[in-house]
Length: 358
Image 1: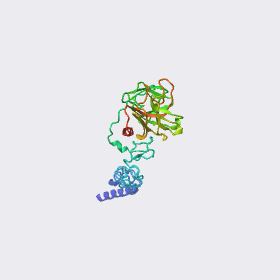
Image 2: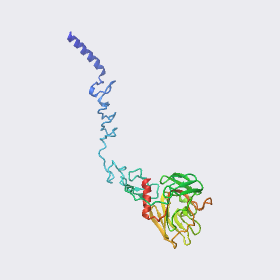
Image 3: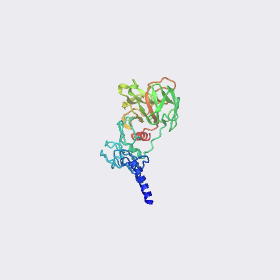
Image 4: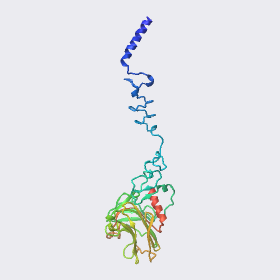
């Protein structure tokens, strides 16, 4: 009786098994309950190296179909393909030996030489800038007696200084436009807009500095000169930074017109990028700097500039509602006046601080 029952069960088992020869129910390697888990198409998440159907996130060694970003065994160790001394795991362009972390940034090259997207001098007139200097502590720059950043305390009618004496400038002509500039926002001067200070600036007639960042299209300033900034103006008085028109390619000058006055050619802004412009006066010596670098100087027979109790202006010259004369067209940012003659080193520090912090 028992033998007969055993044979019946065995026959039933063999009969039902023959109809599903492709269905492997091996518990160790069975993830397809409905059909088969053929080794050629195995979706076993514990250990799957099948290029046709790869879902093994833990350890995938299939070079043709590698979906394991955290553990890729097929790429090999990092290399230094361009021979610049930096391996491919830190070099953002291992096919260019001029690109590596800490390289000097080349302005306008369209490459990120130092592998830091946050450091960029492409919008300036500089040829290069070494951002590695930014990691070193910089000595504090001198404090200006006027500093307009064209971002803080501005409206359609006035601007208030952010450091120094918080000097107020009234919009006495036109309507300024504020927008993204060199350091935060800047002002766009359209040839019909002028600021005038409401007070006389507290500096001596024999010792002062003007500094600003400008971006200008030389063709926009026809004729000349166009006054970027001035303190005092008219026959026999004042000091100013001006720019000539398209015929000179945008020649920036220092202008001091007392009886033996001078126009000092400083350089061009034809690159249409941001440039730091500075003029210093030290007891008769006028010096011009572009981007913190000494450019030109001249000596005068006088040691003081005659300002005739006239305030500071940006965008052209004139007082109050008087007609705007010698208007300037371009963008301006970080305008400063100092009661001392800045040195080239101090101007370079100002430039570095701006470029590192923006």
